[in-house]
Image (cartoon, rainbow, N blue to C red; front, side, top):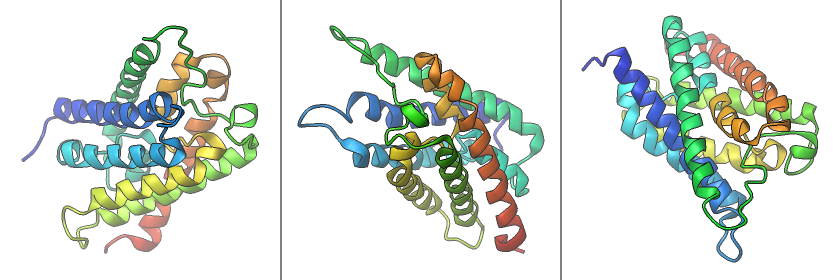
Length: 232
């Protein structure tokens, strides 16, 4: 079945909405709850589960990118049309911002609420572990490149059909387990943008890193797969 572009863009919107609502929502609303908090491990699992569910629900319609860096890497690898890149990115960013808005309304729906860092991405004083900008750029670039290699490899026709979302979801979980202490984990410019808009200030100032590094990582991952691992 062939889906129209509006169908695909709606799928990207809701898939990214689910990713941000599940991942960032768990970080903002559940990670630090006394005695019941899920911590970094729970947040990592939440991100992996959301992309897994989204890939099964919306992947058959749009390809299940939910991430501008993924769309970019797929286009570089020749697996996605460049003419569709910008519409996909716009839908992804809008979905992330809508989910961030829902999280904000819920998070501020109690007495003396404070959103704090609101799961925004940052470096230096705004890194959970106080890591430098250089460390943040490196980890975001490398992990995004590896994420693209997993996505591109898992979706090759030689791989048994239907299992790709599991590998992709587990890969995103692993990525978060590694890098939440460094940058709060982006590897997704749309996810970073939605949270930064509600934090403002420092999050907006540092947002460029969480566009530049994942896009470079997407470029590297796409080129590596196309050069060495693509099915001929």
